[in-house]
Image 1 (cartoon, rainbow, N blue to C red):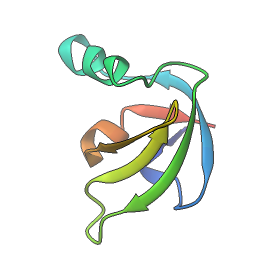
Image 2 (cartoon, rainbow, N blue to C red):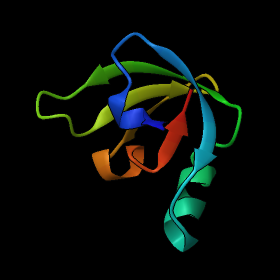
Image 3 (cartoon, one colour):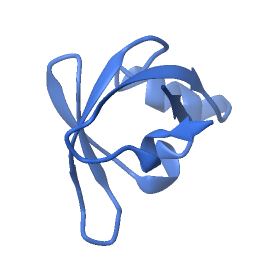
Image 4 (tube, rainbow, N blue to C red):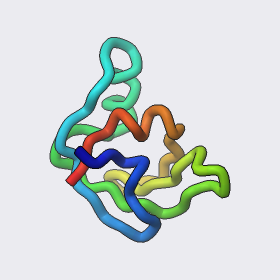
Length: 73
């Protein structure tokens, strides 16, 4: 299982599954991150938090803890 946190800068990945539950999972889905959507990893901050990605044509910053809940391929 590979998570979004492990993706490298410049890589385009596809979401397989969202882990987590309740409000956290709902918030991730409200940001446009759902199953089968493609995510392009734009930047990673020097300490790894946050991760800047492009999803559905807009830029988004995701915390490291949230990125670990997104399983990718």
